[in-house]
Every structure is written in C-alpha cells, then in structure tokens.
Image (cartoon, rainbow, N blue to C red; front, side):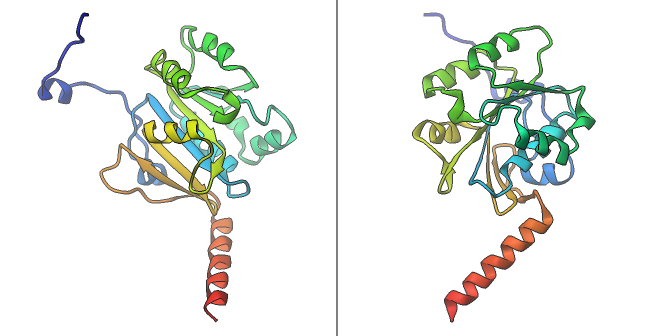
Length: 217
C-alpha cells in the first residue's frame, strides 16, 4: 500500500487554504471559513430557518455562484414567496435553483467544469443519503462547500444519520427564535448569534420572559 505524503508543521502552516473573508454579523457568527467542507443548518418549523438559509445563500452569492437544490419544497408557492421576500432576484446571475434534482443528477452537474463552489441541499432527509454515501459524496468533491438543511429533533438534527453529519460538519448552525446559533471550527471562541429577524427575535424573547414570570408566580 502506498502511503500518503506526510507534512511538517511548517509545511501545513505555509499552505494557502482558500477561505471566505466574511465581514459584519457573518464574521461575528461564523468567522472566516474555508471555501470547502460541510455545514449543517437545523431548526424547528416557524423559527426562521428558511429565512436564514435565504439570507445565507444571498450573502454567499457575493463571493461566487451558489446552487440551491430544493428537494423538499420544490419550486412551489412558499419557496417563491421566500425568494421574493428576500429579494433574491438581486443575485439572479449567481444563484442556480434546482427543482428536486436527485443526488445522482446533482453529482453529474458538479462534475462539469466551472460548476458552482457552494451547494445548498434542502433537506438532508430528502436527499436519502446514508452516512457512508454522504462521506463518499463529499470526498468526491473536496473543493466544494456543501450546506445541508435538516429537520430538527429537540436541540439536534433529526435522525441518526443527520446527527452523525452534525458531528462531522465544520460549521453547525441551530436556528431558534429567529436567531442562528453557530458553532464553527473557524472561531477561536463562541460566535455571536446571527439575528435573522429583529422583530421576531424580540417578540420571542418577550414571550419567553412572560412564560418564565408566570411560572414563577
């Protein structure tokens, strides 16, 4: 068996690894992440997950082309409304929307020269990937950034396989009460929560306080 090359610490430190130069709230939440790898985003319905994903997709479009594979919602009315609400027409030249394109078809697309560097897959559960298939898929495309959207089960992604992806991911983002709570390998300290919708986050905080005060009576 032929062994892979070994590196010295100096050689690794001198490697030029492509990264995103995030700024503002994205920098505060995620840091300056690598341009490849895996992220996972999860959250219960009605907490702002879809809005967060649209905002993230729009921001990533400022760095290059982005694929959004809408496996779950397709291109139905709710998806159309979300595109309109977040003014995604502003990035129409950089956002490629796929209507329930299977993972096999998506892979064929990614093999093409000049294919987008960022791929959002909504959702992991609808992708049908097993964990070994997921690992093989990402390893076949080491220069891509895959962002999987997941259903939630409590405080974690729903399902055994999605939980394994959570442990493997470089960036883990839980959406709750219109805030995105990020754990990133590209931060030396915990990041600040990203506020998806200020009014909704404030209302959720007020409701939680009222419930807590009521329980204390």
